[in-house]
Image (cartoon, rainbow, N blue to C red; front, side, top):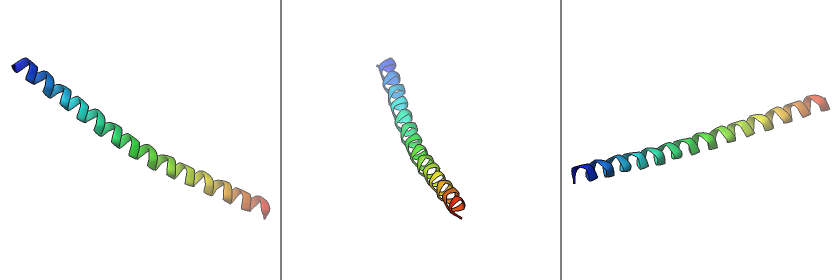
Length: 53
């Protein structure tokens, strides 16, 4: 029972850790992708404006 309890506890901690890490990575990637896209769009727009001028 003790070994089984330890195994279940470790598995639970690992699952929570993976879920939490995946959630944080998803948020970071979403924010980074949005910021990168916005920066790229702004840079392209600025370059286009400069070329037009």
